[in-house]
Length: 168
Image (cartoon, rainbow, N blue to C red; front, side, top):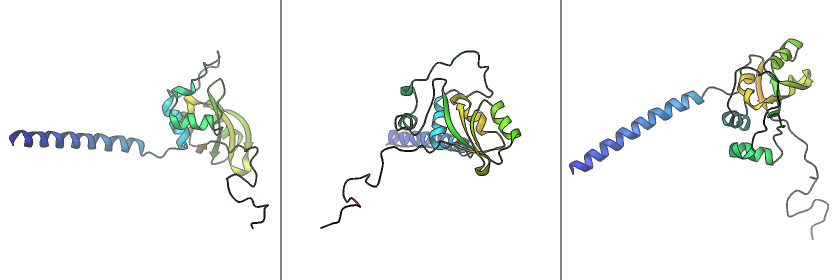
C-alpha cells in the first residue's frame, strides 16, 4: 500500500510539472500572430533570421518533405507557391500602402510584385526564413496566402444532381 501511495504522489508531481510547462508554452504561443496558420507552420519549420541576407548566391531549394504536414498539403494542393529561392508568394495586408511602408517591406527582405493601395495590400515574395521578421513590422496587419484561380471547375463539382438536367 505504501508503494501505491508513493506511485500516486510521483504521478501527481509529474502531471503538475507537465501542466506548468504546458501553460508556459501556451503563454508563449498565445501572442497574436500576423501569419495565417499555414504560414506560421512554415515559419516554424524553417530557421528564422531577423534581417535580409545579402543576395550574393542562390539559395538551396528546400525539400518539401522536410516541412510540416500542413505546409506539404498547401504546396501539393497548389494553395502555396514557393520558388527555388525559398520565397513564398503572399498577400501582405497593411495599415496603408505608401512608398514609405513598401520601402519598409523591401528593407525587411520582401520582393514586391503588385501594389493594391485601394485594398491596403501588396502581393510579395518573402523568403521563408524572414516570414516572422516581416510580420513583426508595425505597418503589417496580417500575412496570408493569395487566392489562386482554380481551373476546370464549373457548376458540377460533386457527384449527384446536375443543375442543367431536369429531375424525373
